[in-house]
Length: 176
Image (cartoon, rainbow, N blue to C red; front, side, top):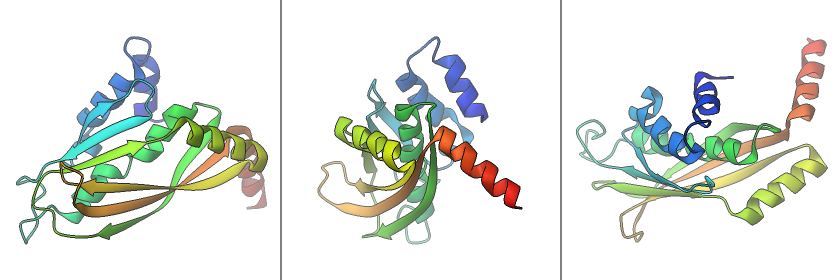
């Protein structure tokens, strides 16, 4: 269990998980360096918004937002969001990511992360049948009016039943 998971477990006794999610990300050194900020998190964690301003910390050689800042501002959100929605009976890992730059970003960018109730139910049903699955979540970094797309990030996320995953790991370990 990571320090962040321990803090979430302890902190959620005192404040809502959504409050911990927002402030935990915004205060954690690994996320602060991205220059992105989580601006809102719904109580059920199904809806999260991130803002990435153009500033001296992320401005690149051609005066646009550095691509690494764009990626790191959105990278951890879908996986950690899904982990917290599904709970402790599931294993959730990032498997891969693809980033597609559409145009130089010379203004503040916004990203929206959303899981629907139907999507969560489908994930749970698929895992119940198949034990492990992968899903792809796409996030767009856009302008404030949601008209211009500057960057598209596709994250492939692995989801498994925790008991299945433990048995799978034990089998793999015994083979080596």
